Amino acid sequence: MTDVAHAAPAGHLETSTGLDSRKLAIWTFLGSECMFFASLISTYVIYRHRSLVGPFPHTAWTDPATGQVYEPIIEIPLVTVGTALLLFSSLFIVLALYGAQRGNRKMLLGWLGATICCGLFFVGMQVYEFTHFVHKGLTLQRNMFGASFFTLTGFHGTHVSIGVIWLITMFVLALRKQLPPENAINLEMAALYWHFVDVVWIIIFPVVYLMQ
Amino acid sequence: MTAHVTAAEEHAHGHPTPGTYTKVGLVLFILTALEVALYEVTFGEHAGALGDLRQVFVPMLLTLSAAKFALVAMFYMHLKQDNRLFTGVFVFPLIIAAVVILALAALMAYHMAFSKSGG
Image (cartoon, rainbow over all chains, first blue to last red; front, side, top):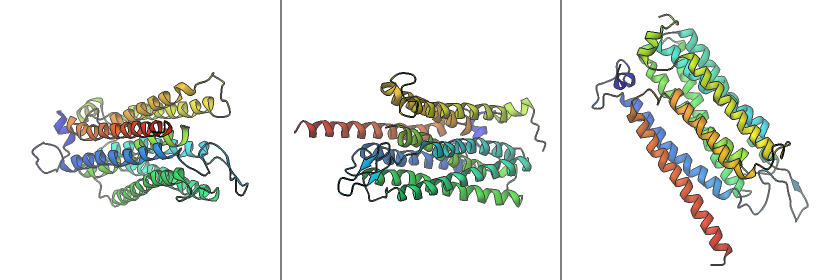
């Protein structure tokens, strides 16, 4: 079987490249998203150490005016669990896709449900983390670290939320038996988007949480 | 259609098997654990346990992240098996993105050095 045949699921319209245009479109979109996140990551890298006032990511800071002590913001354990779940969700979605392509509805629904649970946990973790950080004194307006941190991780969290909504839509379609093997391309596109969200986090996790 | 796919069917479809996906998942998990362990022995509670790793911390962390990124893209996103045009439309902007990050970091480092020298 040729490369072209791999990329062209049954039922797609004939194209000059021989490839399914929907799949080419999602890859092009993901390419543009790479540049979008690159601009946010570089903004964070440049501005994270330019804060004039705390709180800071890894060191405590005492306000000279009030004497109030601000604890280091970053907490590794919780976000490590979130990272692991996001990685596992990538495994789960390929297993769901494997089931969808072979008409194995039980496999499709089971793994897709597991992926959605992991995604929801990750979003919940981020909501908890943001709330916790605000209580510790870090807001979008507080300092350069806060502004660049919330912008970067906030945009990523929004992408995860959109991905969860997309996957729930796929789950409902699968429940209604509207996701047969010939339409597995629909799930494949959602899976590609989900993997992209995962690879962006693979970069964000060390850059934001581990590097000092 | 049965869930038990033969090796021939697997080869014909061109994508990895669930076994391969699981092995890749385990490797990704181990690499993430290594990242956190590296942080712990460099800056965490066990800092200094393996000597001063601060000089090599960032390069090692970036290498581990790049390995994870490549594994997900190649195996889970199927770039290893799919048409190379998909790889092209994804990797070309990725290279531009990497250049943008490096260029901005270099520019700001130069700006900082220039400011400190009083220029």
